[in-house]
View 1 (cartoon, rainbow, N blue to C red):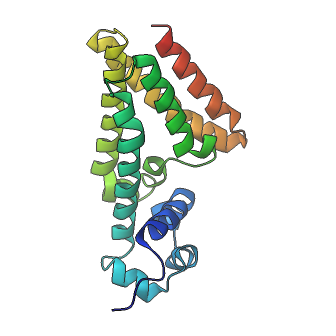
View 2 (cartoon, rainbow, N blue to C red):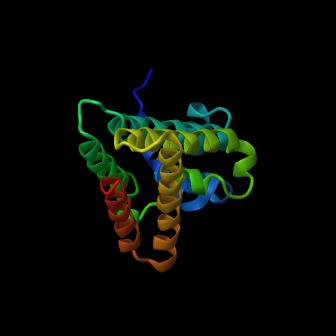
Length: 187
């Protein structure tokens, strides 16, 4: 068997780039092939169920990164709540390249994407809230206040990504992350 010319991680990174930029409906197989460096036949060999399977692989790829670099950081009891928050915020900035990258949950929720990926999107958002709620509890908030703060945090992150893109101003996202950090630290 011949070795793969393009490694799985490279394919997933390229797929993520296309789906972040184009969404599910807008991502053509031609663009996907160009970005991954694979022919359409090779894509179908790796992803027999086509574009839907590619998008699911992207969800899993991004989810693994988020779990490892953000969620585990936010609940790491070996760190103070302030350290968890600082490292978590830094990794959120990294995930979205300082506000220049769209959220995969948003781009894949457009058009037919909600029908196809609604459960993964809902689960992903609930996990963001759950982990920020745990952080709020570590800062001493009551459960209901920790939940409200966590929901607001998710709203601010997602909203600032959209506004940053719309205004072509990444500082909106970075300023939002600073406000989130300050809000938790001033609890």
